[in-house]
Each structure stands twice: as structure tokens, then as C-alpha cells.
Length: 263
Image (cartoon, rainbow, N blue to C red; front, side, top):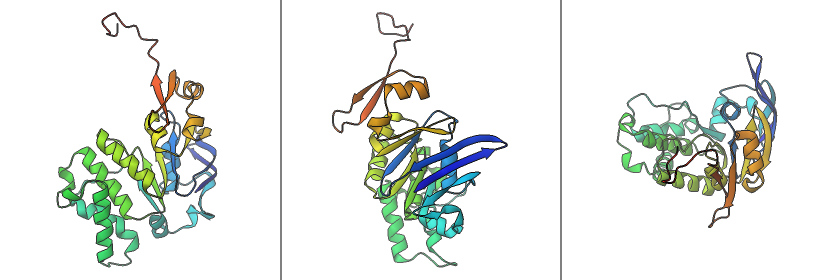
């Protein structure tokens, strides 16, 4: 997938400016940046909740804007920040909605469709909840159900906006491992830079709607860039097992008394 000088303007205010970024097939690419930097807007252009003001998003050589909604849904699945389930469906029914692009007319789920849904629920650890009402679930459980629904679409590209929201540590790790091993192209917005460093093959950094850096986590997540973009001083160390850069926040500006308490 390629962002070809993508621009988005809302009420004459530029949100994203001439973004050029390649998302290689089969890789996990993270978008990071301060609040309001344009990350979610970029994702909305991929799953077509917004139309670019200029440029294009291309999958292979195809401009996504030329696809029908069904064709888009077969190739791209999204988890958005606005995702919610307010009706009293079971978990199995919600996940089965992911098969809709593959079901012309009113065709019922086939045996394969049911197998795809069952596998997606198992991968997200919600199979045991299949007959539960989605309204009865915790926030983290609902989040995993919605990700399972996206997997059930069997898309070429997964677009995820803050997918670790509401997830406990175990399920964060399991989700990031799943993304790395999925073989799919993944574009993900992550606020936690340490999670991004471990989960992503490449990272794009946005500030003020402009791509200010892109590359491997080791190339991008430097103290200088973090200070410039986020206004925070960090020390970068290497993870002892996988070598990924990990950021330690400097607390030098906080006064600490001899008992270890902040003054």
C-alpha cells in the first residue's frame, strides 16, 4: 500500500499534508505522533470514512477511491476508535458480520465461513464467549471481539487505530504477536512508543500533519526525534531479548526527596 502525496483539508484547515509513505506487503507499519498530528485521519482515508483532498491511497496500483464498497471491504478491514456495538448481538454474531463482504445477497454462512469465524475468535481468546451478549462484556473483551470481526473479513490489509486500548498486558502481548505473525499488511496507530518499537517493522512519525521521519524503529526512535516531536527527554536502551529500542523517560525535572517521593 502506498500513500501518494495524500492531503486532507477540513474547513480550509490542513490536517494531513502531502504524505508519501510506503507500507510494504506483509509488514507491520506503525504511525506515531502527538495528539492531533493526523494519524487517525490517515487511517480514515484508507478505510474510506474520509476522502482525500489531494493525492491518493493505492493498494498495489489501484486507487482505493475507485473500488466499490464491497471490493474495499474484501481487501481492507478496520478497527476504529469510534467502533462500538450497541445492539444485543452475541459475540459469534458480531464476528460473523466480518463475513458480510463475502456473502452476496442473503446467502447464509457456509461451513468455511463458520470455520473462519471460529478461528478468528480463538486467536483473540473470545471463543469461550461466543454465545455471550456483547453488551455484557468488559471493554477489553469487546475490543478483542471487534478485532476478531476484522480478522474474519480475511483482508489483505488490517487498519487498526489504537488496538491495545482497554487490553490488559497479556492480551496486548498476544495481539502484537498475532499482528507480527499474521502475514498480512498492517497499518496501526500506537501511542505507546515502546509497544510500537517491538510490534512494528517500520514506523512513520507525524507532526502537524507532516511526515517528519520514517524507517525502522531503531532509525526513527532517537532521543533527538522524541525531544523534537513530543517535547520529552528520553534515554534509549536496547531490549535485552530482541534488541528493539526502548525509551526510558527522563525524570530529571522532578524533584525527589530522600525517601523517593516526588516533592
